Length: 102
Image (spheres, rainbow, N blue to C red):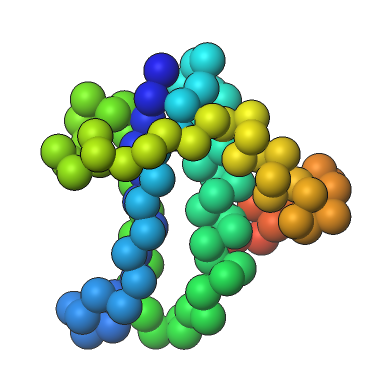
């Protein structure tokens, strides 16, 4: 299955950041986990001012905007493995996801 997600940051209506991804996985749960890892990584990489508005969404590819179908899908397992390696292990990756959620 394929799923689509995006992350954006706005300041007084002006879009400062917009990132999107298509994730391919064996099931929705794995795709959602990969999206959470990707989203946490985005939040860490972007210097977010608390006054900025941030927004993220995750959905089945069938509900995504037409442009999403043009994006190259990323395999969920590969995305998770890559992020785990970047942050130094699965515990650190899980901590990053938890931290980004708050």
